[in-house]
Structures are given as structure tokens and as C-alpha cells.
Length: 123
Image 1 (cartoon, rainbow, N blue to C red):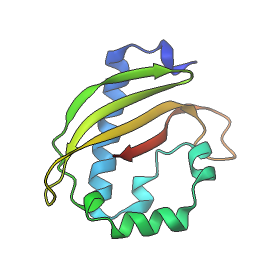
Image 2: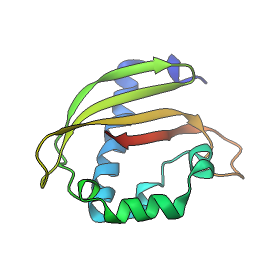
Image 3: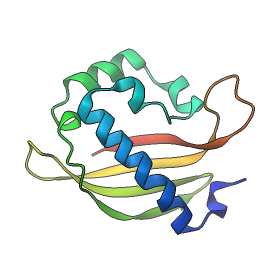
């Protein structure tokens, strides 16, 4: 199935809990839990040592306010991007949060594809 076939309501019902988990595990410094919904394709392309260092040292990623504003969805190709306005509990200002979802495998051995995270970032 192509993720674009899902309604906005269906995507939002999946995206918000995933975003909540990313914020929670980022704040807690739980890198293993933070990446657990990442697609195999995303994990395969990451330099986990560098990402882990950035994850551990970033004041912003350890102080995300769990309250956010959902801004909308962008549909493109085989992915849907959910956009969020994010704030910090320690730094002034607002950031744009991006969560890219699509169908992918959980790991190399997986046969079934499910909705996974193909990108997550805060600008």
C-alpha cells in the first residue's frame, strides 16, 4: 500500500503519537528508544556514532516542550511529511519539526512493510 492512500485523519492518528515519542525519548536521552520506529532504510544510511554524539550534546534536543502545534501535512512521492511548531523549555524561540513517514521495513530481515519514520528533524 502507498501511504498517500491514507486520509489526513489516519496519518495524523499515526504521526502525533510517533512525534510524542520522539520528543519524550529525545528529552530523556534514550537514543535506542528514539530510533525504534525508524525505517531500516533510514537507519542504514545514518552514521550512528555521529548522530549519537549530536543527540547527547544538544541542549535543544534535551529540552523540547512536549506541547507543540501541528502545522499540516505535505504529500510527496511515497512519503508524507508532518510539520510541527516546536518550542524548548530552556531556549527562547520556535523551531520547525519535520516527521517523514512512509512504508518501510523495520530491519533487513523484515518481509512486511509498515509505516515507519524516514526522517525526523528540528530546524
